[in-house]
Amino acid sequence: MKHVPIRRETLIAAAAAAITVAAALLALPVRSLTAPLPDVVALEDMTWVEVRSALAAGYTTVLVPTGGVEQNGPHMILGKHDYIVAAAARRIAKDAGHTLVAPTITYVPEGTTEPPSGHMRFPGTIGVPDSVFAGILEGAARSLKVAGFKTVVFIGDHGQSQPVQAAVAARLTSDWSKEGVRVVQLAAYYDDSAQTARLLSEGYSRDEIGVHASLIDSSELLSVHPAGVDLSRFTPPSFGTEASGVNGDPRRATAALGASLLDMRVHAAVAALKSLSPSN
Image 1 (cartoon, one colour):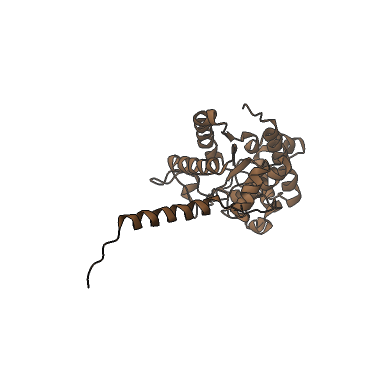
Image 2: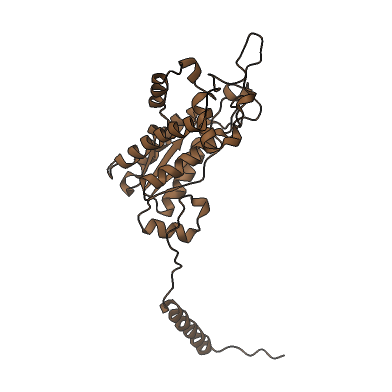
């Protein structure tokens, strides 16, 4: 079959026609996807179009809750922190206004693994090194910054998470200050001094209040996820018994007490969030 060469003029004409068609297509109006503002605050329950609509409406603050999977004695489930902080974060976002909530970060520092220390001595606890946790926090914050959020707020329910969150928040805020984006460690949420003072004034002892998996923790979880607590499984420690992982006495924990104690933390967090000025 004889090869017929394509004339240069024909190629030029075809290219010009293609450019004309492309220009015409680009000139056509693009219809943006739209969505009404959702009636939820949790990002995982929203579409990306709803998130964009929320951002456009001024929802430029986002909470990043951190929980934990750790031993909480024989009477309380490992996911205590996740349930409590997720419920609290949604309330804080709604009360503060123009605020959304990212998915809860479950894996947090819990102690060393070789040898096991802290909560890692108990089966079921899952911990990560500080550096890994810091990387997760930074990755989440950078993702939210790219989306258009201007204030990223770390809210942690676990003690060992607090210093890492504070350090990451300070570093990223310094890095992004010229871009008008800040990262905040909401220490007011974790501070339980007001709760402790109230319980002492109501006749509870310090030994009863304790510091882990005790009266406050058990009551708060009863208020948001009652299926996660079975007080009949708790027995006070006695000589020769195996360590339970509990520091305190949860036997007088109730859902009503937990709801009122969690109210205190939510209100303190909302006040701290509202006090943030654009220059902070």
